[in-house]
Image (cartoon, rainbow, N blue to C red; front, side, top):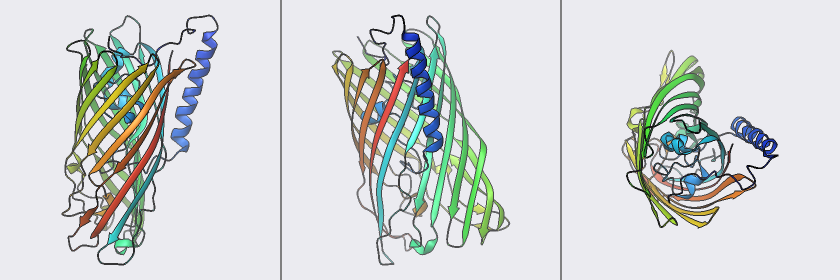
Length: 405
């Protein structure tokens, strides 16, 4: 039998006196989700281009191959249709500690500058309500799926001194179980964004509270122990409005176009003991043409981004009744091209290896994951200020805590 729902009730959940404990855990999860989201800066966690990764410890441990599994509330990020198999009320808080070592050996200058905006912590809150006996349900997400942070100081002549962007995301989905084997979900996305683009001659900062998009997803179990999941997500246009000083002075703006995203994955469970999933995704980064600061005059920051693909594979071993072990590998294609490379988005083809574990304790589900990401040296030789050899290593430690009510 396929193990679909990880937030299982403990043996004492049905006894008298559990109501107080349920209220306690609900309050704890709300506080754990809302407070870190406001107090912990998420703005330095990026994958390809400026996509934030490891939104769920359960998914991260399995290489982020989660589109066809989608069996906890963090499915809101990967495939909300999976919420149809999660009855009742479920909440999950996910957080991650992130570390990065990124540098460049410049071609035209001495020294090895480091990106001085290091990866910071990340937090999200997810939940769903799927009434018993109903085909309809709701899901919500509060997280930061897009973020960018680079700081090169006076390297490259100071033309890419500092760049930061993060889009706080609020998602809401309606979920419909068409049958016992097929579910679909439709949802909206609201982004509240802020950003900064600075050089040695111009400093800009701005905000936007009205970026909107949408998505649709499906999860199908064609046979027992098999699942196929897919999600299509539209982009959104963010116009950061604020003020600039220096060469561009006064009211100014920067446009950030969030990409369209398509994900698809297939999963199979072998003998109720081992689950294997393979996912792929496509992200339309080519929408983002520049990070120009536009006011009464303009500072041009052209970009050369391509649409990128990612491949994710994961294995989950149901070691014991309430304990799982996870292993994963993923490849994320860089969005920035060699030609026209701009160090404001200095990504690279990234390999990611991960391991994780999940367990039920004291009526709560815990997931823990460690991810190590590395890229081969990337040499840019365009006879431009950004020429050099770039190196990057990242590590993250993610924790998710979930409760079924």
